[in-house]
Image (cartoon, rainbow, N blue to C red; front, side, top):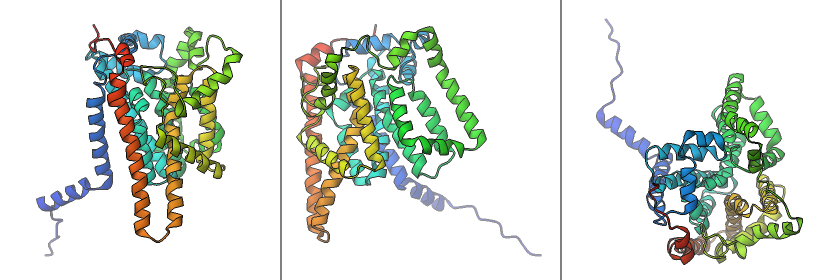
Amino acid sequence: MFKVKSKSTPSMKEMGKSLLDFLWQRQTIYFVLLLAILITLVFNLSIIPTNSASQEVEYVQSNSQFSDLGDNPLYLPHKLATFAIHEVTTSVRFVRAISIIFFGVCTVALYRFLKRWHSDKIALFSSVMFATNAVVLAVARLASPDVLLFSWAIVISMLLWIHHGTSRRIAPLALALIGTALIYIPGAPYFFILLLILFANKIKSTFTNMKRSSFYISLFLGIIVLAPLIVSFVLDPGLFKSWLLLPASIELGDVPMNILEVPSAFVYQSPVYPLLNVGKLPIFDVASGGMFLIGLYAYQKYIKLERTKIMILTAALGLILGALGQTLIAIIILLPFTYSVIGAGISFILDEWYSVFPKNPFARSFGLILVTLVILMSVYYQLTRFLVVWVNAPETRETYNQSRIIQ
C-alpha cells in the first residue's frame, strides 16, 4: 500500500523566521516608526503650554453633552472625539491629544501625495519641515477643531490614490466616507467645488466603475453621515452661513487689505494671534521662505501639471477666504499646500545641482548634504521658536492662564 505523504507542520524555527521576515518589511518598520513618533508627539505636545487657554476651555465645555453636538454639528469629527474624551476625563490635555492624532494623519497624507509628485526624499524633507513649523505645531496641539483645516491634504492624497493606485473597492468607499465626514468643516463647499473642477471626470469614472453594491453602500453611508448637518441647517439657518464662512457684513474697502494679509502672513508679517504665534513673526523663516519662492518658480515652468492646477486653485480658495475676512482659516488651510511648493523648490535645487554634476558622486553628495543642512537649520529655528520663544512669551502666558483640569 502506498502511504500519502502528509504536509509537515512548520517548525518553531521556520515560524520564527517568517515572523522576523514580516517584522522587517519596510511597511512594518515605517508603521512602527510612525506610531512611535505619534505617541511621543502626543505625550510631549499636549503639555505645551502647561496651562490652557480660555478658548480651549470653552470649546471643551461646549461639547460636554451629546445635545451640544446636535445644536452645532460643524467640525463634527473632532467634536465627537472631544465628547467621548470628556466622558472619561476633564483634562484639556486629552483633547489636545485628539488634535495631535488628526495632525499625524494629515502629515502622513501630505507625505503620500508629495511622494507621488516628487520622490521619497523630497516628500520626507517637506513633511518634516511642515511637521516642525512653529505655527503648525501650535495648531496641532490646540484643544480646538482648527486642526481639521489641515484635512484637505487627506482628500488630495485619496484622490491621487484612486487615480494612480490599483484599489478599485476600498479607495472609492474610503473617499466617500472621509469626504462626507469632512463636509462638516466650515469652508468645505469651496474646496469640493475646486476639486470637482479639477477631478470631475476622474471622480465620475471612479464611481461609475464601482460595483453596484459598493456604490449603494457608499451612498447610503454618506446620507447617514450627512443627515445631522442637513437637519441642523433646517432647524438653524444661521449655521449654513457659518458653514460658508460668510461674515455678518463685508466692507468692500477692506477686501484688498484682507486678501493681502494671507500671503503676507507667510513671508512678511502675520496678524497678531498669541494663541498660535509670537507677535507678528511670519510663518516661514529665511530658508523655507527662499525654497517657497524657488518652488513658485518651478511650478510656473510646469503650469499644465496636475499638481500645479491644484496649487493654483487652492491659492485661489485661500484668497477668497481672505477676502471674506477669514484670514486665520485661510492660513491654516494653505499651510500643507505651501509645503508642497517648498518641496518643489527643494526638488528644483537638487535637479539643477545634479545637472551640473551628472556623474560626479562626490559633488552630488555634497549638494545633498548642503540642502539637508539648510533644512535642518530651518527645523531647528522653528522648533526653538515654538518650544522656547513662543511658550515663554508674555502674550502667550497671558493667553494660556487657565487650569488644564476643567471644573
